[in-house]
Length: 247
Ligand code: F6R
Image (cartoon, rainbow, N blue to C red; front, side, top):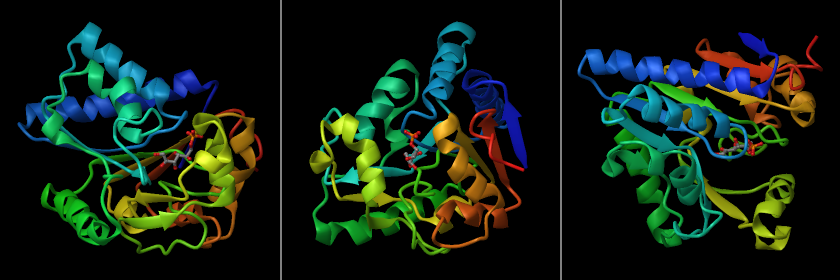
């Protein structure tokens, strides 16, 4: 299903409140909420609202475990452009989550260490009973996580090569495309698919054409987000502009 909101802020509030409701429901059941998180511009207002709910309304994250979708490779966690820094600045530094419950792919591993790390990432999610909610943005290549065109529908967490367009879109954050890493560690399409709820968010006119392909286009590895059409647990949360090419 597709939900269209007047503006990104209204859409973001609705996503934040769904996450908050899940966390509260799990608290009542004395269970952990297992969240799959995304970085980038799209979810920033979602995290801001979760921080507000913590500070102003007492929402606790003590029963929350998080798994981020991806991290650049190689990448130091302390680097300004790392997704660790992004998550700390936008969410984790402002809430009461136990840092032991935060999982983000490790951009400091040696190439030899990556396969075992990726298997362990998958195993850890599985042992916790799977992701309750996975939130996603979408890249202009149609990537979800960093599953670029060509990604297999059953792919797991792995090292991938970033598409040239993805690196161009990241160039501003890095002060030039040549400084953007060529690789990343990402959850796979298969990893994302196992989540009980998947919420893909997109805002602004510049996402309209890829959203049209993702929602209405032929299912193909050329646009990895089209695989989401095969899931019953997906919701596309859009603003009017991102939805403007849909028929
Ligand atoms: C980020 C991620 C990416 C982004 C996508 C959109 O963790 O996995 O798929 O969601 O590149 O980025 P923004 O939101 O910056 O347009």
